[in-house]
Length: 57
Image (cartoon, rainbow, N blue to C red; front, side, top):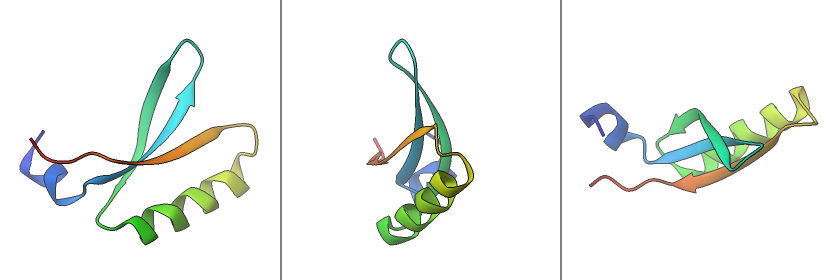
């Protein structure tokens, strides 16, 4: 994990088939991540998104 990634510990991930996932966005706080996730869900209703906390190592 880079230093920049450690500044943005909240991630929005898109869940894909076969237990795969893509990090769509990284945010500094949970409220911002949830707001971004709701906007993404409005744009693409079929996709499944989750907000996760990815702590720095």
